[in-house]
Length: 171
Image 1: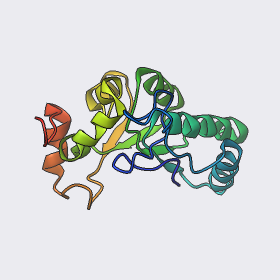
Image 2 (image 1 turned 180 degrees about the vertical axis):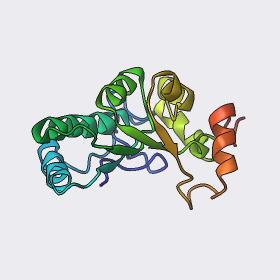
Image 3 (image 1 turned 90 degrees about the horizontal axis):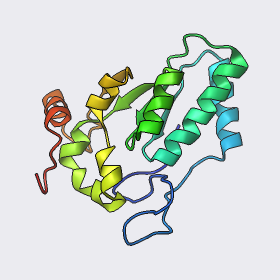
Image 4 (image 1 turned 180 degrees about the horizontal axis):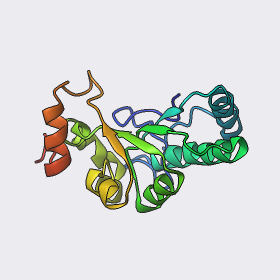
């Protein structure tokens, strides 16, 4: 499932202050909370492991709200739910990821290859974009991928980008 859009298109669902130069642009939420929860409940009720694309902090919160409700309603103990990207993972988001035991399927090479796109969202969001070290420190399980063709397929780019946190355009 997709909860929001993409960084380059400026459609990730974020909280107020919006995109720099576009203060009313808070991104796109693809589902109403009720519809997302219905879809998640249906899939999880069929013993599927949920995985939802969410980059912006507002989208991540919507997904976590839905996951929490589904886990509670179905009495799940080992759900293995995931969020693809979890791009803007603030401390509040990370706390919820840990509490709900949700796996992050992150994309560390984004920091290098498309890190300049993050600047459109302000320095505080840049700080909390794809924070691999923070995940480790906070006990959050993170898988990682390249999101080919957005970035090259080699896993070495992702490992390197997660460690050095530099972007291609500005270093």
